[in-house]
Length: 430
Image (cartoon, rainbow, N blue to C red; front, side, top):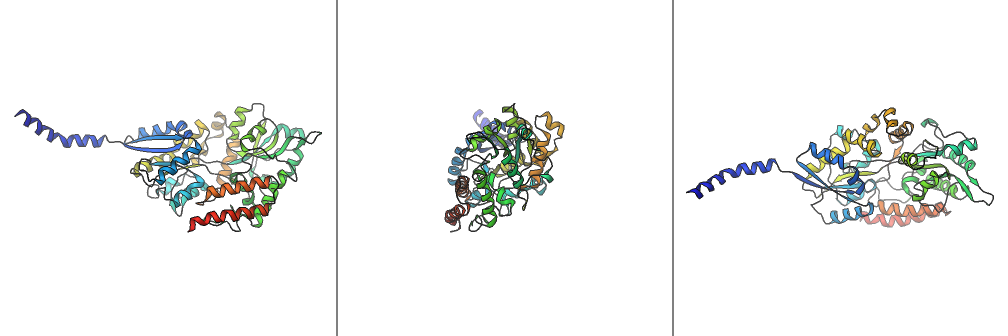
C-alpha cells in the first residue's frame, strides 16, 4: 500500500519537476575568439550573463594564427558545439562563400545597426546579408617628432583636416628632415610606414588617386584593377620613397618600426591609433604630435580601417541566444565606452565619441588625437576589399609591395601579381 502511494505521488510530481527544470534551464553558447578577447572582454561577458540569466557563455581564446586553424576545422566539419566565432573583417566574404555564418538580418533592427560607423557597417554585410557585426575598428594618422621639426625650423603638420598635407608636401618635408652622417649612413629617416609592406597600410595611396582597392567590386577579378594608371602612379611614388629619394628605410619589418620612431630615428610615421598610448607610455622622452593622414593633390583623403567582427555559426543549435550575445557586444553603449576606457580599443560605435575632451584627457588619451581619429573614421575610412580570395590576394600583393619597396618596376610587378592572383581567384567561380 505504501509503495503504491509513493509511486502515485511521484507520478503527480513529474509535471512540476519538469516545469521547474525548464524554468531553470540555461542555454550554453560556445565562443571561439583570440586570447585578447578572452582576457580583456571577460567583464562584458559577465555583464551579459547577469542580464541574460538564461544564457551561459563559454569563451575559448586562441593565439591569432591558431584561431583561424581552429575555426576552419570546426566550420568544415559542421560542428554544432560552436555558436559564435571571431571574424577578421577581410574574411567576411570568404566565410560567406563557404557558408560558415548565419545571416542575422532578422535579429538586428535598423536602429540597432544605426550605431555602427559607415565603413564598419558596410563590411558587416555580404550580398545584402548581415553576417558579421563589427566589434572593433582601426584608423591611421601621421605621428611626428616635434623636436626634429623644431630643430629643422619646419612647421608642424596641421591640426585641421581641411589643411592636411598632400603626399607631395609630405615628401618635400621628409627630404628636408632626412639626416645622413659624413659616411652617408642615415641617422634620421624623414618618413616611415608601420605596416610597410601590407595592403592595409598602403591601399590608401592608390585609393586616394581613385585607383580603387585593386580588385573588382564582386571580389572575383583583378585584371586591370591592379595595373590601372592610378595604381601604377601610386606605386611609383611608393617605390621612390625608398629608392630615388631614400627618405624611408628598407629592410625593416613592421615589428621594428615603432622602435625606430620611438627612439627618434624617424621624423614622420604613418601608424594606427594604438601608437598614441604606446608612444606615451613606452617612450617618455619622445616629444610627438599627431596629424591627419596625407593624400595626393589630385585625389581625395582616404584612411585604412577595419578590425575584428563577430558572427554566429551557421551550424549553431542556439541561434537566438548567440545572436542576442552578438548584438549586446556590438550595440550596447556601455560596452562601447568601457572597451575604450578600460583597454584603449577603438570600437565602431558612435557612442564612443560621446566622451568629452575632459574625459579623454582624464583617461590619458590626448583629446586632439581622439578627435582626429573620430574625423577619419567618420569621413575618410575605406575598408579593405571583400573577396573570397582575400588571403591569397593579401599574400601576393604583400610580396609585390615588398618587391616595389626594394626597387622593382611597379608596372611589371603589378602585372605579375595580377596574373598569379587571377588564376587563384578563378577557383571561386567554377
